[in-house]
Image 1: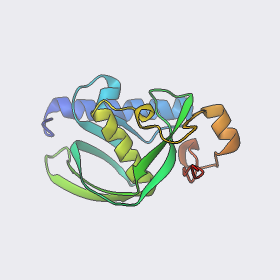
Image 2: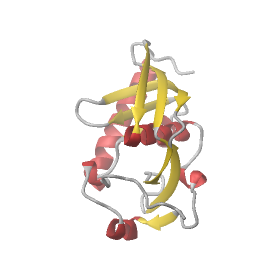
Image 3: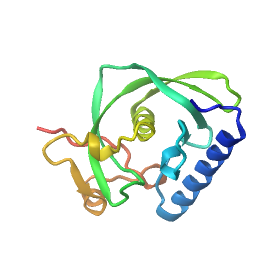
Image 4: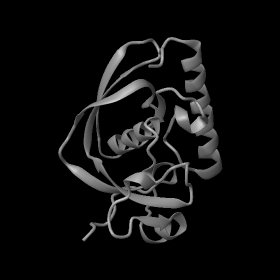
Length: 166
């Protein structure tokens, strides 16, 4: 487990913030990063869901999962030219420590829940391609943008819900 008050964790959190900012400027994408994505083998996620929703999750764990799953097209810095259809829980409850070491619990729904599930997968060494579902779960980003993308936050689609798989 990562020590939330340590200088190493704070350094990783700061590096995640800088890398995410650079990726946004370069690709107009990205809302969160997990420490393993920058080579840090600790359980830390940096997430931004808007100016008022920026936070560092240290040692996050999902403590409750809703029963209402949904399909979304997922993207990832690990394979920036590919979109992957995955199934996620619409509602989750996450317990984590902040950088002061205080335990926090947050309930997330929809896009925010999908995002944190994606980043927690990175903490466990799982990529979105490992979670692909449906008959045709992969799409080049350029094709996906032609057929599915709307204009949304950071250039991401809004909503990110995939067509129903039959």
